[in-house]
Image (cartoon, rainbow, N blue to C red; front, side, top):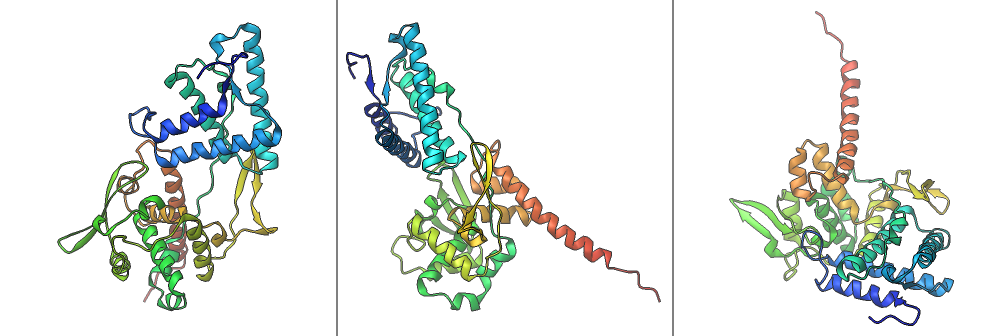
Length: 354
């Protein structure tokens, strides 16, 4: 792309090339794998945010290759990107109301774009992006307790009170709470993913996100769910899009009575802010999403004694992944609760004498 008289390059044309190269495999991960469709979509959402910011705030985004700048111009350019970062993050926080985690991902995408300019295109765009701070927050996980999952699986009175669509939601949700797959993998399941060996049913699947293979033994209730949907031609489970399913899951858990209050805080500029719904405390059903399925499956396995290495194999978490330990800690909390029940019971036992 030629430079104009001010030695500037069009930011958005380059960013579009960055997205297209990521989608089409011209840009790869450091390990040589293709960029996932989900990651490329995240780049596009960042593109839309940047467009909106520039239009509403009349900010002119451009790239000036640092190797063509003198010392005074380099200082000017550094201040330009410092100003951009301040105004853009203020816009995301104050006007759009986003939290640290989402803004951190957005800034990380912009830094990845600069690395692409420098490494893939050898453009020498400078290291101004290194002054962009990426905030992170640890968002609380809220899986179902084993007792709650048991209720959804086995309570026939509850099931009979559901309409046909909500019965499909329950089947999809319970299956997801069992096999620990991501939503993208669940919706891609086909009948060909089921293997029967010696009368036992297994789910054989390759993760869309991580390209890892899993072979998961299915319990009787999961087999019943599959059999209930034999009418589907190729798909294993009823079809949902993520937006509608998130709404349905909230409705399902509200009907199940999972309405106990939960305390959620989100970070904004590093300050914890309690989340509420119409000035009221959030309920468990309000915070449930498609992510709840995978979180429930993993924590249920850990809570009920499945070894960590086995759960990792099923869930596809790496041995060095920090995310997995959040599930371990949550499961430990459940185990502690059960131990407290045992201690209380033990305390009440007295020696019976003749």
